[in-house]
Amino acid sequence: MSRMPMLELFAGELRRLRGDAGLSQEALGERVNYSASLVAAVEQCRRPPREEFAQRCDEALMAGGLLVRIRDALVRESLMPWFREWVSIEQEATTLRSFQPLVVPGLLQTEAYARALYEGAAQLAGEEIEQPLAARLARQAVLNRPGPPQFVAVLDYTVLERPVGGPEVMREQLRHLADVGRRPRVHLHVVPRGTGAYPGLNGAFVLATPPDGDDVGYLDNQLQGTIVERTVDVNSLRQIWESVRAEAMPHGATLAAISEAAEQWT
Image (tube, rainbow, N blue to C red; front, side, top):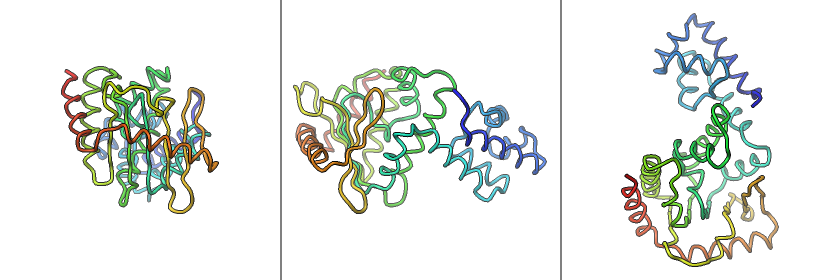
């Protein structure tokens, strides 16, 4: 995978700022509580900087937010061009309604679960995983900000049973799912095991409600995602959403089912 300009810019600015401060990689690592080997890996473009790493380095090197801003641009650059527009919509939405019949929605994935998906489903390996993984995890900040969107997710029960990454990864993922589901503006619903054919089985989708204007939909497939804006198509997705939601268990029962499923992964 060719290096991204923003990754090289971050690495170069980190080296420059560290040099100006008269710090070795070991000394900077001690100040930010990361290993010298990680500092070296970031400076050599072998690892993309995570959010906390960028923030700590920015503070330690008195960069005035420069490293944080470059990392934010790096995250945007890491996204596929056809996905960037959707992420902008996602970040500004007041409500997000997500249906996933196969895997945990990206906004709710743990790092280990997401990594296992990139390895198994996307067939990425080694350093190829790091940049898209960092971008996926960065998107999750939308649920942690002040005044987050209302997030309603419906999952098929098979999502809780599919061994993505193995038992330990699944146990951590489902516990995380239950924890996030207890937040005031997050509502989770699972379609029970044994439910027959229902409209959502035709594929995953998301509906986003912007601060002003009409809902926007997003469909994913093997090649790329599609943003749905035509009124007739958005209305169709709304109808499918209502059908899917009607099949699912209430929020409280769902959290209990997820917690029980988590403990089955041993």
